[in-house]
Amino acid sequence: MSDETSSSAIVIEHLSKSYGPKWAVRDLSLKVPAGCVYGFLGRNGAGKSTTIKMLTGMAAPDAGRVTLLGEDVSTLSSQTRSRIAYMAEGHPLYSWMTIGQIVQFTRPFYPNWDQTLVDQVLDHFDLSRKQKCGKLSRGQQAQVSLALAMAPDPELLILDDPTLGLDTVVRRDFLEALIQLIQSRGRTIFFSSHVLGDVERVANRIGIMVDGVLRVDCPTETFRESVRKVVLGFDSDPPDFPGCEGLVTWRRVGVELELVVVNLGPSQQAIIESLEPRWTDVVEMNLEDAFIEYTRGSKRSLPLFKWETNRVDGVAVERTA
Amino acid sequence: MWTALLSKELRECALYAGLALLAQTQVLGSGMDLPLIPIISSPRGTEIPFLPYYGETNRETTFVCIAIILAIVMGLHQTVWESWRQTTLFLLHRPMPRRQIFLGKILAGVLLLLLTTALPLLIYCLWAATPGTHASPFYWDMAESWWRDVLMALICYLGAFLAGLRPARWIGSRTWPFIGAFILAIGLHFAAAPSLVIYAGFLLLAAGLLTSILNTARLREFP
Figure 1: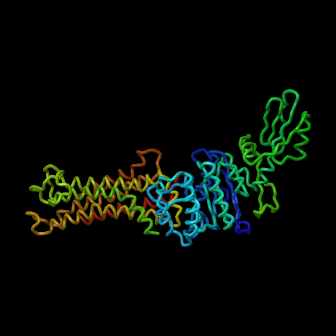
Figure 2: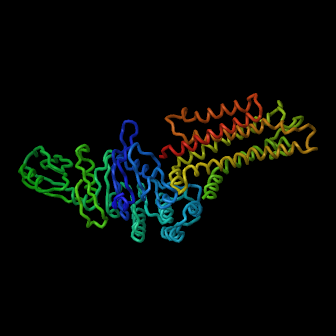
Figure 3: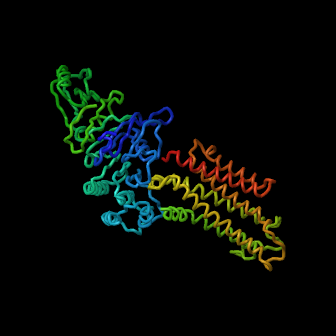
């Protein structure tokens, strides 16, 4: 096993899963370094949930393998599972239990249970131990789930859309609590989300699934800075764009031609200038805009966008896959 | 771990088991002239305990119906209900082998089923065996059909559990483990064979269902 693999909290190798004739996940390979906060993105039906199901052992892959904390997920021991926390989408809890009861139910499964931390988290969110889980709002269920997930002091957290359905304030509170816990304990977090603002705030690395294929795997900043929208202005109807390396999509908007390009450089500039536009504007995008432009482009021709790095501090050497 | 799991399962099925226990207490209590609610009980009259009775009610039929209904409800509740509420995802991620989690569920279900069928039946048998309680003979062999009813309910519980756990394209194919188990259990119950062979048959059937449950739990996808 290489150093990189052994220092990875999650290693996914050539993972594939199909439902009937449709590929839900196709040849997915990915390494999440220990200590990384990894945002796993994609539109509905892109394969995120299927991947997370395979990560947690709830679904068996057709091909490939997943290793969590150095152990194959298909034969994951109870000891290793106790070092991994998983928050399922929608935060399912036993509705008949009170918060106190669900804490009491969960506690005996974990040798490293930190009751002080549970109390701190519950107090922070002002949750009474006597409240029934079935009567909690979605946000409060997420908060209880977070307390239960953090209490065993897990080395790896897998969160399936943890902020889904939460209002802005609760979402912010939830994320801030999560960030505090990450910073104080330095854990690996793998989470899927539809809220790009959350991902931008928390994740230092992202992966983007498009139609079951992992198209992006790089530091968050790299992705955001590499996707550019170029607007070309013309006097009359714009010409067709001939195409260039890294082109995601192009479209006409009135007398303007809008291009979305990955890694805009001299070769693309030369092609753009050959069209002789009256003016050119290069627009920086935030993560949400970059994600939208990237994922709604022609899916078959999306430029693969993978950077591999051995470190999470952003200083590591990057190379294009 | 085991205590937490068993407590949870016992608590979740307690309502059904409690209702079934009340019903069995009423049915068997009436047979002992000690009904729970006298106003709705039929008097024992000339009925001889454990012998077929063709009066107003057949006590054995009522007893086995209650047991089987409880078995089906509990088996489905422990599987379909949990899956539907998605709490399976919460439960299965606990650091305990999946096989043990499902064994814990089944153990709790079997315990409750025995508590609500075998225990009242045992009390009824002991009452019938006690001299002076009724003016008719009693031999333990007379209760054998009732004990087979208990075993039949256990098989129905395992069949319902497997039907609830097993994914299928539609309800018809999903229920076949239960229907199959039920038909085989009825066949064993009424088979003209030595008791030992019949009990061995029940044991084999239960072992087959248990193996199938644990195998399905290991292989199936949980949504």
